[in-house]
Amino acid sequence: MRASLFSVLLGAFIILAGNPGLADNDAAAGKNVNPPGPSTDSAPITTSTPSTSATSPDANPAPPSTPAPGETTSAAAPASDVAALDPHKRPMPEGYAAAVELFKQRKFPQAQKEFEKIIQSGTADVNTHLCLAHCFLQQKIYTKAIKEFDWLAKYAKNSMTLQKNSEHTARSLRNAMNGICPANCIKPNDPRWTIKAGAKVIQYPHSGGGYDTFTPNNIGQLIVFEHGNAVVKGTCPVCEGTTQIPVLKDGGTMPRI
Image 1 (cartoon, rainbow, N blue to C red):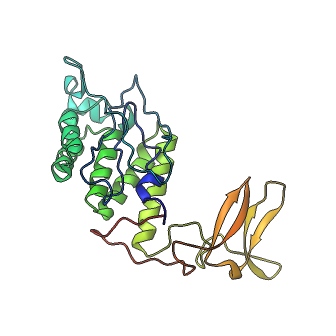
Image 2: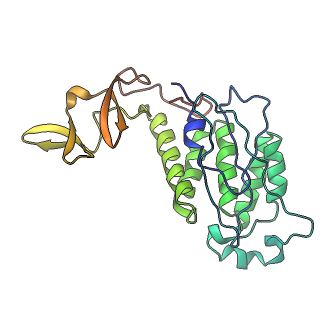
Image 3: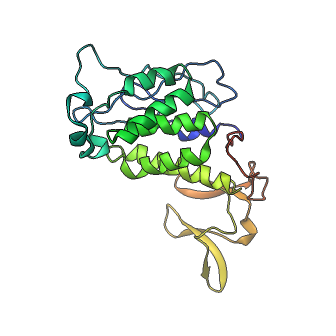
């Protein structure tokens, strides 16, 4: 339980000049929060991993890009034309910059309403949904955050990293809400269990060929990949070997990994 779910899962969500920069709710009180900058056809979403360790989740990224005076946004085109575009190709929607300012001021309920208005208009881009997902996270409304991260995993097509991290975030939150340990410990209901030579096993490909094989005796043990090989690191420190955690509910404390 050494790093917050935010610091582990959100590290690759840097969009253009900034990202939500969300730290653990309890640790980040009073700190600035920076949402992602706009994405456009000419400047597609890019991602990178910040050089911060798991023990320093509170680092603040650069401020987001905002439209320069006179810069053209989606307001210059009919909403129907913008809505016809794929979400990752849409220009920055009207009202996004104002919603971003509310987000930066940590006025998450107000920012949420503004991002939702944009989505209802049919002109929302990927960044709008990303910001809304983090609005829900900051308010600990995990059920709605999962839906937004599921959306990003499906539609953030010009950033494979964002898609994969969104999918991972949604899965981790969903597991937490089902009481499933988020750590990589061997679980009894893992779909990878198979029967080999009459025995129940889980196998991971070995870097030198063959497989690393684990049996039901390894349930509850933490698996770490070192040099491409699956290595047992003892009893899982998150669930203490039970493979279960207290069920996460809306309003509950964000789980830590």
